[in-house]
Length: 570
Image 1 (spheres, rainbow, N blue to C red):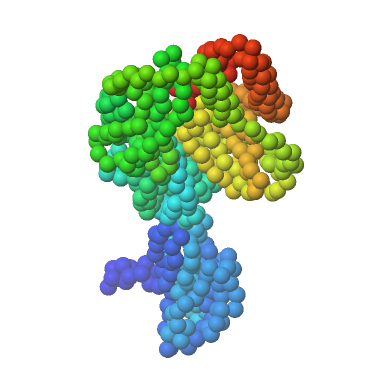
Image 2 (cartoon, rainbow, N blue to C red):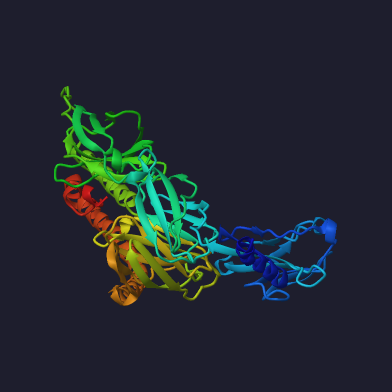
């Protein structure tokens, strides 16, 4: 009997201690950042009625709640530490559970609920341990801002970061028909970005694009997938296998094939054919003539008619899309066939003096008409031109892999406010006539990040624009992408000073040469007319004294006036 009593003694002691200090039940809850959680606490409201309750952080003390976060009087909440703490249960049923909204990692810890039951050591106490863990960020929602021939600009809005700061973004770009395994990924290390411009797209090609966002926990799920088609551009390649064949004495047959498929940059709509003839000495005697042929098949042909017999002709062909014409293809000169003449001799008796006079007058008239036909009279006017904006000054923040971060300082806006900026870039060894891309920016924007998917060395320059026109080009940056080490502004090739000097000199030369150009056109024309008049008057006086061959003199003299222009110069 004593043995039985001794075995129940520890249990009796525990019950007595529980009555004196109040029993505490405990449990643990694990949840994630950003979620809502409810910590349960209930008592018998039917027996005790509505009672005061408090919630605190930390172990429950002998009285009240430690670090109290919320308190109620049994009917309503009378104090709370934050709006995120809510008692959403039915007080009449004894449900005083605590709900914490939009959890943060700092919410982790011990929470205690204390219901104030009348009497000594009667309080109901419930203790929980809450663990809040950070998660990966939510997926981005990406949208297209602008698509051009070789660039696309996308933007996104910030998302829930999972409880940890965003560290980077990733952009995947692939051909629409390819798998994501072939996508080219570009990493963006600037967590504050909300838009980016991808460069070096192929015109008229269709792509898929998606993005990811990462924090220290991991990378998000993929964003929505964008499908985009770059705009068409003028073809980059000339027509192929161009051949000329003399068809008749007045026609030449021309055949060719379209440019390479990867250089068409869109749907071929037509071909522009330019041709002109040459005399035996190799000097042109006709202006360019033009003809358009609709693009319909893989082997095109056309017959150029109404040509001169026994004459060499040069031909150029350009392929055209809706965006413009591409480079021209050329072929060796081709001569029309000789014309076969059937003639009969007819004896005509004409006084020599009359024939000479008529022939001389006819030749003189033709010569003067030739001079007049080849003379273009220009009229100069003086006007006050509006002032376009000054170019911006472009600087480089950094280059990381294929990502280029730029900034610029606006210049004088001219006679009208600046309405925007645009950027041009090209391969370092290429001409500005073959600019690879143009990217537009708003007038309030002074920095941007662009991505060049093909590592290489590029020249970059910018222009400002307003309602009166565009500025001169800015300083030129020479930038190499694809390096592992970041490039700063001090590593960029110093092209700006040379470019500015060259631009200033070019402007001065252009201004000085404008008036000189007008003088160079008008003065030769006036001199030719005076020479023709003097020579004609003198020769007519000679004819009165001595009959001669005026037509031969005119044919070998200085009255023939025609310009010259080589085929290669067009």
